[in-house]
Length: 298
Length: 298
Image (tube, rainbow over all chains, first blue to last red):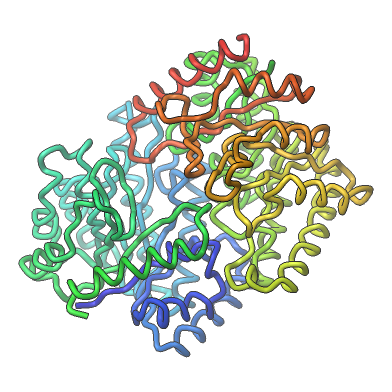
């Protein structure tokens, strides 16, 4: 199986391309990574972004790392993105995504994406407005898929999240969105399935245990899997170093096989407190992959 | 005393200017607020930013809210900002700050700022490079202070954080930075003192209990205080609803009086899990101010 890491762990620490490439290859012993827009903000002026993209390409090639895709991080997830209640916010978000797609193209990754947006509290309370925003989101995704194709990407990624104000947050919602977008996008819309999101008990209740239904229900439309350790009580994004974590790597591997998805890339997406020392983060990451690698047969 | 809230609590929920102004005035019963760049990203193109700034000014005026200052949120804190190891990153950060100052000017607040930046892991390990970056940071602050003056701001804010890779993180470091900047900036550099940062025990050890020394040591250079509940084991940014919180609002008030800082504005800066419902956040905020207001004599 294919196991790698999102750059979420390296934020504000190993940010030079040569540094994170070195850490992933030599400290963690991995050859697969996913870029995070928490490392370079697509809002940077194009000439600054392009210069860094070239340096990243050189660094990953030098280490023999596969950089698979580029993903929304904590910074852009902080905003309402494509579902912003103000027209100004939606326009800005479209520009951010176009920039991000341009940058992903320069990185020569195969896809980009993330959680797509969140309704505001006021708009989420109005079913008519919420339905309009959903329709707008579909249109935005079609426009962005066309841009992604122009930049040589093979897919756009959307990540279901455990929030009723974000689309989609259920298996049925994701299936509906696939039907609503069928035949309309120049590149496929693929799901990023985050294991820790599906087990968020406060929202999903008893169904939170049933990750296999997500894998089978979204099936061929899943483009990748993100992994975190969690207790299911919050969206923890822990490393696999917590005694109260309920994600069992052996079960992850077994269910991916059962759903016929064992060829998909799997990325750890762990976030650590900013105030932790670099040594704390590195220790947590090393212990995490000491747990994950054997489960994945690596 | 002057008690208000940073918009950190409202991120992705109450983002329309009329919505957060209404919540702060009517649900929380406050008349003082601090804008967060997690609500509007200064990277938005200028015409979109300006349009929203006008709407914000109108909304706060309509509610009789004082919007005191504008502060870096989670989104921009995710990056290395002015201490980025790459020249591209430092240039981008300067542009972000210029945009943020422009926006703060349009909001007609008196100051803007936040944590100023973080060294990368590799650079933090090299004392010579770290010293160079510190000198560059001082130069950047001088340039930004000149821009702040042009836009009508009265001060730039810097927030000490409990990280050795960020400047400053000690009382002595802050005092040194004041001396290093003395006479060089067109508007004063003021400290934002975050109560929860000073009590981070893993870094400060026994001294973590001594918030009064921070207040007295930074004294007249403190421009505002940010408040969070915390157990001192991480930088929690909780509301005042946790049994294991060690910040005592009565002591906050007493120490501010003892240091002669009782006229400074105090802002709650609470962050809640994205996956919480709006009702959970509102309940936590209501209970928080039910605790804080009596302590502040409101």
